[in-house]
Image (cartoon, rainbow, N blue to C red; front, side, top):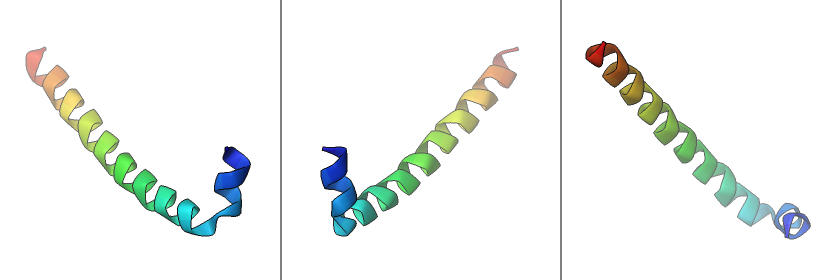
Length: 41
């Protein structure tokens, strides 16, 4: 499966753009969690 993904550049590009989106989303979630923790203390 991984070798198939690596051999297909178009799929890899899709994954990369998705990964960027996921990175931004998880960053946002982490910030929200941090704010929540700080405000509840």
